[in-house]
Length: 146
Image 1 (tube, helix red, strand yellow):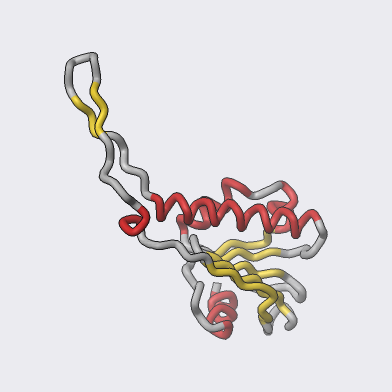
Image 2 (cartoon, rainbow, N blue to C red):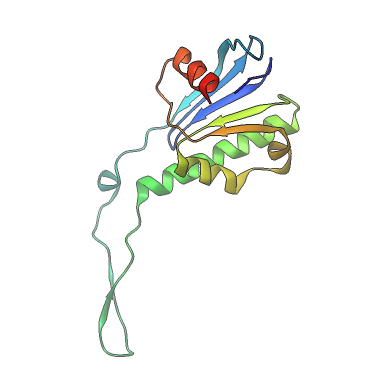
């Protein structure tokens, strides 16, 4: 994949986002870090205080187990929505003309739910890989191989 000069590359998952800008050209990317953010998100078990509740049903006289909330996943989804909002604000400010998003499939799906029209118009590619925490040269190599 070619990465145009000055394109923004977002590498994200449910708790980290890394904004890079291509200072190189389309065939020889030189990604430079613009912004990085990591959120603390403890495991689901560490965030829970109780077990799932139970409800009594007057119809049939039985008890039903309530659906247990996965607080860790809920927080990852919120982080993806916040990331999409940041992309929207940057697109509306004309901060980038070309955007490439690299994220694991679940995060990518959550981001897509929240893309603003201006973000979608500037989106040139998506790569469904988890490259958060990888060195920049590995991210550049993954883009070139895609």
